[in-house]
Image 1 (cartoon, rainbow, N blue to C red):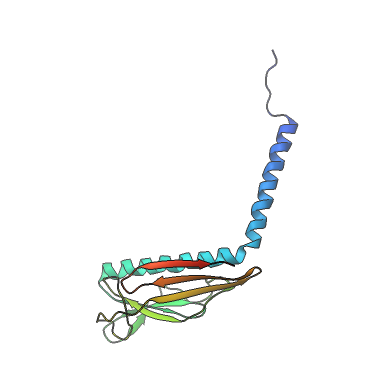
Image 2 (spheres, rainbow, N blue to C red; image 1 turned 180 degrees about the horizontal axis):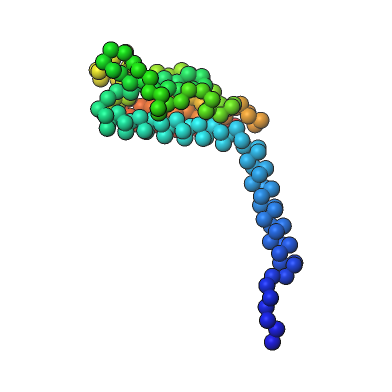
Length: 163
């Protein structure tokens, strides 16, 4: 009786070829959809930050203001007289994806109850309407958009529109 010594050369070549084909398919998909992947990453980052802010406002019983511009967003804390920046949790520009822009500026506060209130009345409960943060990426296939809707009572909805 002959003892098995391992894999044959043919078996190793077949497995290696299969792995190479799968890597080529995955790499091609990633290259073609790079802009879309960056757009999804930015949307996930922003919604994650909104959830963190909601938790922080509840934990500290304090209102935090979020301001969105065309390529960045930042946070502010009310100190009783004016808004002070919270640099340790926010980031300004440079970290958003290269081709992603925020279409509409947004400026709102989240209070300790998780409600979206007006920034000019941080200690009051004057609700804002639905805030929409529109992210856009102009890619090879067309313009892709993700809308992050923040409802007055704290709900968040993410809508994707990929061309």
